[in-house]
Length: 135
Image 1 (cartoon, rainbow, N blue to C red):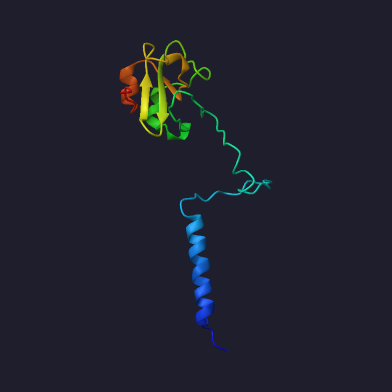
Image 2: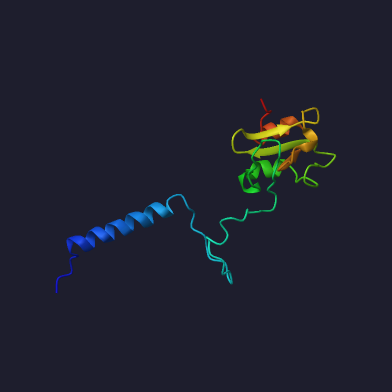
């Protein structure tokens, strides 16, 4: 028996391979959760919420705490709640997709509305952690 594919079968096989490659392009492989039965399609419409992520209305898109470098995490502290930093670390650090890592000081416009991802004791510490003043 011949082990080679016929021309039509090989064309179909290549087309399926191309479709699989293109549909998986850019997606991270996820380890299946034990006991999880939801398919990716069933969760596509629901927003993902991760601890530390925020939904800010000040036109800054937030990342998750995973985008804060380990060095920055060592230099900063966690916010006390959604919009407040501890009294000893009043500089708000915000991770944004468009503008990068920025910090806000108390005199900044809309400081009270900013939802920080990390807080710093001063601007020098924020800059050492890789954050910059907004333009």
